[in-house]
Length: 313
Image (cartoon, rainbow, N blue to C red; front, side, top):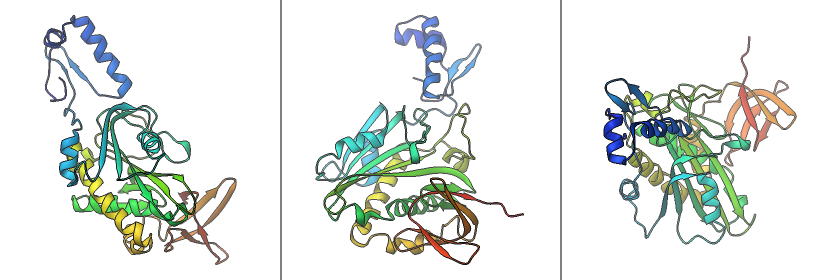
């Protein structure tokens, strides 16, 4: 009822729900669990500023240019994690790509066990499971190729200042707009399934507290975006990217990555467990490894780790 962004009185909401105004107030307070901003104005009632864009299977598939014969799409109102849902579906062989979207995640996952904040109907929470026949060893650089697909979509939609931070962050003007999380199941050198998780900030609520600079599509574009359109375009971009990646790996994406590489030329420190290596980031290899030139002029390849940019005085 509140998704239109207009004011609705407690009395009118109560009449439609068949409950008292006090019960409406209690339910409004309960929305804080889902990080939904609800404005309350005496004499006007309640509203969600800007409204909400709820997901529709038909609309997402339309914008993706796909149908149920080529893509299985599951949309959940609430789930723990779309990646977990996709991993569950990928336990057996997949005859076609399987995608899951959610309005709200209670346990959204980032890299290395971090929490991915997932307010209700505010952003894109998408996981796509795909079958690969050549084993997990051939999937090096997949996270980077996904980042390229996301970055190129953003650029086509008119967003400037897009960059990628190795291995999985999507940035705009240095603030985090989205992230990628790849999880694998199956055999190292035979049939395996990859689950590609992509989170993209749509319109973050003011109550959300995050320990790093973040930005969302609402701030960048000045309007609340149609989440069905963005989810569909993202799916279309990912499926196209995966067709090329499954045949040629990361190599054809390397130059495209370099064009949006947010670390190249920066002084960085790479952390792998208790080991920290500092130097200048030089880009990535054909397999997606990060190249860092250390102070002793040694070039080191990193296939995993956490990267921070060092400020040089």
